[in-house]
Every structure is written in structure tokens, then in C-alpha cells.
Image (cartoon, rainbow, N blue to C red):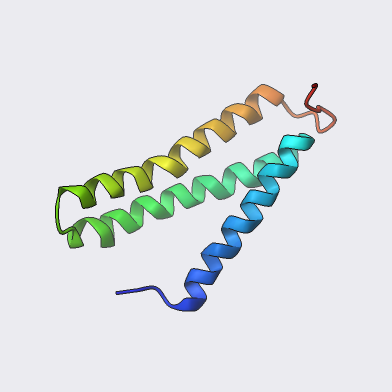
Length: 100
């Protein structure tokens, strides 16, 4: 079962907005944007776990499929953890900027 083109393009759009947001944060830290990005990535990680449990694991064809599922779950989970840690590190001050 393949997701519809609209669903696939929705995820492409999410990834593009996420990439632009992360790039924006790399140039100038904004606590509000960091909260939105960290929340979105956390939700992505949760959706990925649900998808893996409900769809991917029951349809696995071999051990390599489980490795792919583990990587798919790990990537957004690690990203969310890093984003929340960065958020704590930078604090609530929107004027913080990267010194360089």
C-alpha cells in the first residue's frame, strides 16, 4: 500500500519547511521558532513510531527491513532530542545569536 501523491507531497512540504526553519535557526536563534520546530519534529517522531508499529513491522520481509525501521524511528527521535537540548541551552531569549 503506497500513500497517495497528496500525502507524499505533504511530507515533502513538511521537510522543505523544516529545512528552511533549521537553516534560519542556524543563522539567528529564535526561541519561538525553535519551540515550533522541536514540537514538529517530536510529532514527526511519534507519527513515525505509530507507522512503524501499525504498518511497517507487520509487513517486514526480512531482517534488513527491521534495520530500516529502526533507523527511520531513530532519526527523528534523535533530532527531536537534539532540538530540545538546544532549546534548553539557548534559553528563552530570542535575541541570542550564534557568535562566530
